[in-house]
Each structure stands twice: as structure tokens, then as C-alpha cells.
Length: 458
Image (cartoon, rainbow, N blue to C red; front, side, top):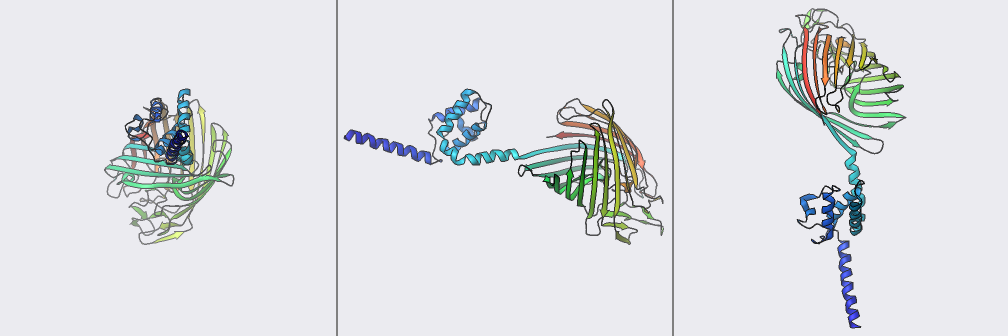
């Protein structure tokens, strides 16, 4: 009887100890536990990546909580061998209580790790050309190198809504004074949310606004845009309202420079032109656009845009705000033969009565046309595209066009894109052109520009 009572007491003590260990997730898993060997086997088979400090190799003990985290990661794998699956099941049974206590948190963590995506582009660019004419120096022959990196962050808010951000950093190494590349720049360019609304898709915040073919606008705007339809099939459209950066010139950089003449009194004024926004206020932009796909290879798009809250400079001392400007754009794209595509677009505004440095009225319409042979694909090394285009774009026909060296330029371009290795591109082009309107008393200047750049995508 005494022997039975003694054995019962020992069993009670042992069971109590085991229960206590199971209820304490921070107690150590014994150094000689089979669990370490099991985890080492799973790591060797690639089921798990191991865990911090090489502890799966038996270099030191782990708590039950730490071991349960490793088991949870192994349980998330679906493509494993039968023997490994048996080991995972055995570990799951051993650490069932700990897994039950933290399983939801582990699942949430794994889910959130998939919710956030990072991507970006790094760019190295070299430009050589003469377009920065001034009153004292015509036909500048300037060069500029430009390093640029941008990061995109995309986070899933829920099943419907997404938050998106873009950060840009630019480093510029100047020789001469190509205006577009003065100094360095670090900024958050875009922050917006996107999700379904009223049967369409709403974009709200600071985002990139793009007209049908980028002839009127391709720049950041703070506001909201509602789109509907599939842009690659049938009819689609968009409505936009937002604010553009204060102080920006409607005519790019062409007509806020020195040397634009006011022919009412014959003086030369440094500030003659149109700026977006009244003093201290941002310019407002409202637009509507439609696109129709006639076939998988042919489409047409139209955009109407209205600018409010403009400041018109008649002279250095005389400026006033007015109602704004209306802009229109129409364009199309099509495949004309195997591997050969063609696009053309026309844009116009109702601004007039502004004259350049030699007395000619500043052109308020413009057109752009391009032929492109083949198409490069960053996932396909060796792929390439060859392109040729012609532009004749008045400065007052656009806010900020999508193609570089467009505003107030007429002439032709020849270039190519090439993918040397996966996720990289090389672009080279040459522009042979001249100004549409003069921005210096020297008259119309040449615009001969060479560019070579390489981009890396990650």
C-alpha cells in the first residue's frame, strides 16, 4: 500500500512539472530534446530558413515560445516532402499550446509581410545640348550628368484599398547650366490611396496626373481622380480635380526666363508670362478625359482641362489674376504593320496675346507624332525598340508634357531602347531642332540635344 502511495506521489509530481512547463512558454526546451534535431532536419531540407544565432544547430537552448515561432513558419509551407510533413506535425503536437496562444499573431504577421511591396528605379543620365539661350549668351553648349533613384512603397489597407507612396532623390553634376538639372533634390513626390467607388476607381492624395497622351499634363497633382472602365478595352474615362504646385509656369521654363518683351511699352521684362496660381495660392486644375479602343491595337483619346487661379505678368511691376485657361488634347495610337506602331497627338489652349523676345506671338498649339519599331521588355534581355518622332509644340499648349525637351521645341528625334540584362535598360537619342518662339533678344536658338542613360529596376 505504501509502495502504491509512493508511486502515485512521484507520478503526481512529474505530471505537475510537465504541466507547469507546458503552461510557461518562456521555459527552455531541454538541450537534449528531439525537437532540436527535428528543426535541424527541416532547415537542411529547406523547409525553414533557420532561426537567429544558429540555435537550430544546438549551440544553445531556446524557449518554448521561440520554438513555437519556428514551427509556425514551417507549418506555413505547403510544398514539403512527406517525411518533413510528419516532422512538422510532430512538432506541432508538442508545442500545440504555444501555437494556439500565438497562432493568430503569427498568421497576422505573415499576412502583413505580404501586404507591403517595395520597388524602385535607379537612373544614370548624361545630356549634352544647347537650349538655354539668354540675352547675353545664345546657343549654350551645356552638358549635365544626372543620377536619380526612386522608391515605390505599396501597402494593402484591406481587400479593396491600397496606399501608395513614391520618394525621389536626384544628384546632379553640372557642367554649364542645363536648367532642368540644377542642384540636388530629395522629395516625397506622391502619397495617395486608391480603391473602388461608385463603380469606378478613386485615387486621392498627391498622385501623377496624365492626360490622354501626356501632351497637356504629366506631373503631380494634389486632389482626386475617379476613373471607370477598362483602359485597354472599349470605353473608359476619368474626372479630375486638384491643385498644382504654386509658382509653376504654364509654359514650362521657356517664358519665365529673362528676355521676354512687352511690346506695349517696348521694355524687356524678366517676369513676363503666365504662372500657375495667384500670389501665395496654388493653381487649380479640372479635367475630363475619354478613351475608346476600336480594337486591341487601335485607340483614340481626348482630354479637356481647365486651369484656374492663374497669374499673368504683363511687365515687371504689373501683374494680375484672371479666370484661367482652357486646354484640349486629342490623339490616337495604332499598329500599322508587324512590330511597327504609330501615335500622334495634338494639344491647344485658349491663351493668346503673349509675345516673345522678338515680337512674335507665343504659339498656343502643338503636335507630336512618333513611329516605333518593336518593343523592349525589361524581363527579356536582348529586346530593343527603335523610335523616331517629330514635334512642333508651342509653349502655351501644355502645362508639362510627358516627353523631355518638348515645350517650345520643333524638330525630329531618333533613338533606341535596349535591354542588356534583365531589369535594366539603355536609352540613347538625338534631337535636332530649334525653339518655336525666341526666349532671347538673339532670336530663335538651336536645340541640338544628345542623351544617353541607363536605368536599373528593382
